[in-house]
Length: 323
Length: 197
Image (cartoon, rainbow over all chains, first blue to last red; front, top):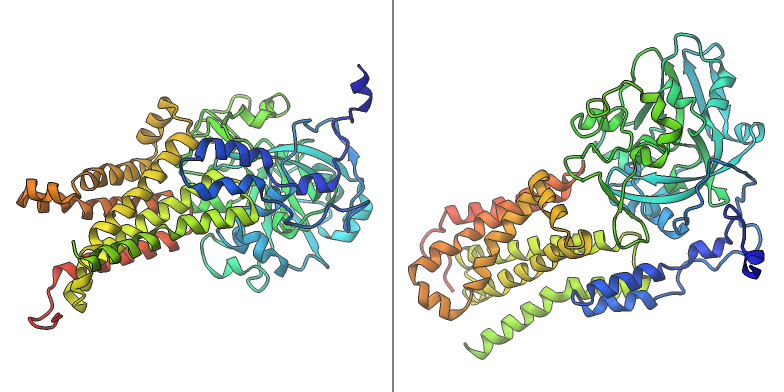
């Protein structure tokens, strides 16, 4: 009983330094399993002392955000992992490329254009956006189509609140998003691995859903560039590639917009791309996932565990066909 | 075996183990990355293929460059490739899938890149098992026929690589290109006397 008094509420922000700690657990679990592979591996679990020292007080770029009842209380992925293991092909196709190259991106000034089927099309600057909306912290599960997952404390605003300001017309049925196109700042765009700019899309009701977040920060501070600064989408019940990064344009449309991975490989990546353990990707079983920092795979949940909130959006749809 | 051959093969083994030491040193220095199982899978798989390509480069080097001294390295690099392939396959089976038979069967049947990789591994296994001098003597001419499977294994390994990447084909195409050159180099023989030495 006494211990309880000392327990922190689950949503209390863990000191920044905790995220910077190395993956001791992972190291031990792996060494136990992999001792036979190479003697050199065993050193990993004891390695330490790298990375910046734990910040004292508010780190630079700290953001104030209200906690949200939509947050999960699962343990958060270490900050180091969330910022060094990224799919952001604009900076290279290796997972370590974004952390290496994303410093080339200039995130200020940054304008977001909102256009198409809206009564008041226009632009909003990132500073204006930060000043005019109340920020919330949303701790969400993130499930990548490559069968790994993380838990990230995002900071942002509900996308619906932003869209409402531009007044969608009755004809709007879809929302199309576009990443910045600038091979100078985004060296990965110099190779045509995907069609640039990266494009994503949602149905309007998905975009207006309270879970759908326009994120400007994570772990209590502004977004690192490799995580999609200064402005990215977070749709926690869909595979990670739907959550488009470094957005410069949002267009409301009548018709379903083209989306980058779907254009690249329509058989592998559907427009909806809801997390679905029943529909396998040709390259990855979607039944299970490896939570970063954990050794054993865990079962993947329908809609990434958000079925209660979002399953009704897809009532009557054959999600095996509309994957 | 001459002392020279033994030294040459020992040096090749030392070089062949460098990627493992480099990975171990990097891990000791910086700690594990976010997804260590994936890192181990990639390092072991890439080097299994690379040592197999080096193994296949020995014969062209003898024919075209006259490097007859390199002949014993075929076996060394072939076995290094197989060693990395064993690590690679066991990383998949043990670390990644936890030896879950259902998950392994599903992977083999439903994911064609896994099937291609397993094919390459299955083709390499009898070659590694018959790499001894005793086997060469025992099998006679059939040994040569059997060991032609190495070409099929290399092709399957490159296909495995091509099929597993999502969008960026640069690395698998580079390895495939090297394999094509090495196979093409076998189709033609240099003019008599060109490979003296």
